[in-house]
Amino acid sequence: MTAWVLIGIAVMVGGFALRLNPLLVVIAAALATGLAAGMAPAAVLAAFGKAFNDTRYVSVVWIVLPVIGLLERCGLQERARALVAGMRGATLARLLTGYLLLRQFTAALGLTSVAGHAQTVRPLLAPMAEAAANAPNEAANDRVKAMAAATDNVGLFFGEDLFIAIGSILLMKGFLEQQGIVLAPFELSVWAIPSAFAAFAIHSFRLWRFGRRYAR
Amino acid sequence: MIGLAQVYVFAGLVFAAWAALSARDAGNPKRFGNAAFWGLLAVSMLAGDRLGDLGNGVLVLALVAIAGTGQLGRGPAPDTAAERATGAAHHGNRLFLLALVIPLTALAGTLGFKRWPGLVDAKQVTLVSLALGVILALAAGHAWLKPRALVPLEEGRRLIDAVSWAAILPQMLASLGAVFAAAGMGGVVGGLLAGVIPEGSVLGAVIVYAVGMALFTMVMGNAFAAFPVMAGAVGLPLLVHQYHGDPAVVAAIGMLAGFCGTLMTPLAANFNIVPAALLELKDRNAVVKMQVGTALPLLAVNTALIWLLAFR
Image 1 (cartoon, rainbow over the protein chains, first blue to last red):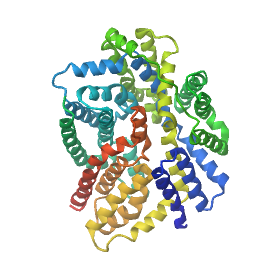
Image 2: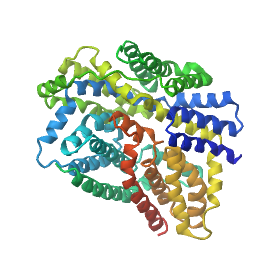
Image 3: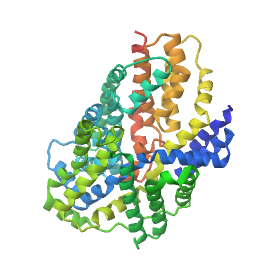
Image 4: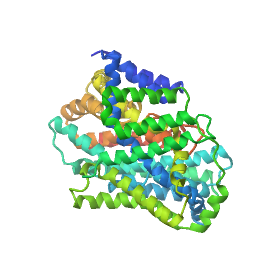
């Protein structure tokens, strides 16, 4: 085993830094690492192809787009904006903090796919945040939308590990079992609770400050 | 039994429809590039199991060639502002009800399909419920909103064209992780890290473990790939076996330290790059930049939590 297999990481970092097309960078990194490990080019390609075929479920999520597209064409985003604009107490910080809490809570119950960037952020949360904010220009408006997406991620990541049957908990359980340490999923998920509170405290504090900057 | 195979067929048909609609999208100067890209994805979904490993590899090369040479484009967006405004006024809050059909079906499916174990593959309940939710939402949408027949697919194509090549980046990165693992990268990184930990310092080992989880997650684009490496190189041999830390704390909070890394890397494409594309942001790293301010203090908290809780 040689340290040359790390060249794939260098290709990734360099390729992303140079803003090359990420798909090109990924395939180049796979080839570089595979060749460094002594695999033939065709073998690397076959290994990549097998993994690509085995992970097709990752790209299945796009089937929601016809529904989102139909609802947007019928005015969903406009309706979401109007709803928030009509609520007097709906500040940007309150809206996003409320969503953060909801996302953490539902993810902790294992309901990770009830919300998401395609399902809720683009059609609902982002337009609501835009309506609740008073963004002076396009760049500021982009920042508001980016914060909506960021809030979804923080809520998901620091909620889902409280659920015992989520992928990461099962991965840890499986890994520890192979090393001779047998733990119940519950014994792992309970230790995600302090971090969940910390994530809520830190991110909602940031949302409060962010909201003051773009107050209506 | 309904499982992944049926979901893939459904997804394949959707991608095939997008390929066909792309080909006749006269406003898009690169319409045949788009048609080929979504068409290849349709082939992958519908017939991937029959292509063989090398065949799938060649399919990936073709996808990369189309995207890498700039053959993907999008036509001018049709001005539907007036239509959307009248729609919003006409349909009212019924639109929210329809937007909730997919999440509610996911909820009902996750809870309900367990009662009929023979009906749906237990491991694929989430994806099957998602597909079912899409079908139900489309049916309800057609009944209530009465759009022209092709509107959902046309609008879906417009959205997927906005996402463009980023649509398959998460799947590509997952595959890259598999190649990295096959090349034995985990062992090499673990060996390098073992050399930088100060001898006899519990706090030093905790910091290398937690920060290493975040850094390695940033490089690999996902904490699942980083965890076996860091837990195998530092977490178990040092924190658990040598210093007698609680393995449950070390594993659980170590994983969350990795999630802080996920917030800070463009390589976690489905969380960080895809939403930037979906929201049509100018800067494709805008979401990552927004998250750094939360991720760094949270990483410090997680590091402290391991130190405080694992060695009670």
